[in-house]
Length: 186
Image 1: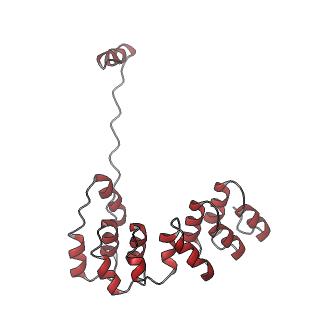
Image 2: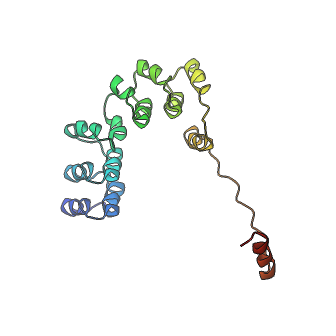
Image 3: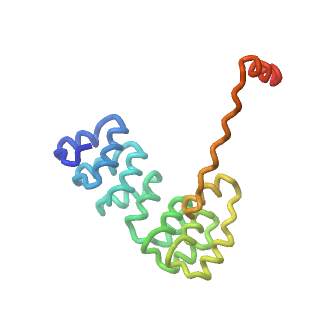
């Protein structure tokens, strides 16, 4: 998308009925004018609103609305001062966003270090300002209960590796393939 588009055209694209067009505006126009950002931050599509909050700094008058919206609450945390209310939110994504907030006070950090969600605790362990003793204590609790959770944590830990590609099956003749299918009852 041309970064020199006139505001009127950007506003038109930001209100396009196709969500992929509105999403392109978010991805490619990070310095969009305020009227375009407002349109995207208040879009009817929750995915567009969520992406907008992650991309644009919302105007202060929209923050209460974005924090009240379940679709944007976790993303909006980055734009406010962390509070005990947010640190105790029932949504673990919100608590994880609070745990990763750059201005997290030590008291909330220590509270979230004991959170029941291991992604929240992982965010605390990943913080540079977490004292080594607390980090060791938190890391000792990071035993995910599923391979999927372990895989997801590997990304934030920087330990993710792609599995080796599966070996190519040997070439079979049509007769061999038919015999294998018959053997399998197919």
